[in-house]
Length: 376
Ligand code: NAI
Image (cartoon, rainbow, N blue to C red; front, top):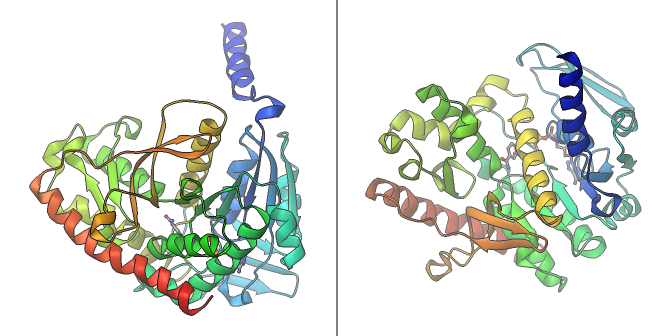
């Protein structure tokens, strides 16, 4: 029996590690020392499709944009910042340091090479050069009482500057924007790429995967099912009322109009912000969601068909209503966006949610576009 199990394990591992050298991809994480960036980098290091992991390893912005807050026992020196987050399950240490995170992850015995870069223009250019995927979790997270839009003033310029570097050094990469407010930061990246003459709408993605992950989990908790089987379509954008779950399309249409569930899906991020009590927002679940999206993109790039992920993209669906970007199910392919699915059949309650979403989304998008026009 043990021999059979060993053989099975071996076969699974052989399949998992079967990506050929030709298939391997360079992935860059900008903001890799942060709450999301660290576990995201770890998950990418464990992904056999990734050959090179390039990471920027220190804040570009101000030292206090890191997650050290009143909730943290912190020891800060010029070289190392250590924070323990007692509010999280178990206890563990995050080390945000100048040199060590890349070195740490690089010891994991998977094939990919991990390189940390200094946050200089040269370091950034080296991190980006040749990247197929650039994930951007750089920027400040929310504190209790804040909306994602409250982050705009700080994060807009961070994302703008990183987009400029990406347009210069990785114009053909798939850009995955995690930094909030996604509804505005994605249009900011688009504007910067347009100005540089390298905009390809098929390669720009706002990462809304966490909304779908949450919806699937919350439904499974109500129904006592396995979340793997709960495929909940979530459309719109990535904040508050712009997050529109379509339960009518799931196997539980009775959940349409369930106010508690809707509240959890639209404001699930607030639960985490509140629980962390000043120490930031979702990081571990976000890292999982970001790694899932990157994995889907890599699978599609490597020829797998039928890879569909929800994501916030330059979309034709509501352009006639002045909404240039919209999240819906998107089929991914070697060129990025292969096919944008429309929202499909929805019921009257969901239509009302969608109307509210579009009104807000339009404002968020215009705000991002205006920011670049006013702050080029
Ligand atoms: P964090 O503060 O822990 O980490 C941010 C990292 O970005 C830090 O390492 C910081 O040094 C770095 N950084 C800041 N400015 C930079 C710059 N100009 N260039 C390069 N790196 C820079 O924040 P956390 O928790 O990792 O969140 C990051 C962002 O992700 C926030 O904007 C947050 O709102 C967003 N987020 C998005 C989610 C989504 O579903 N799309 C879910 C959760 C958070």
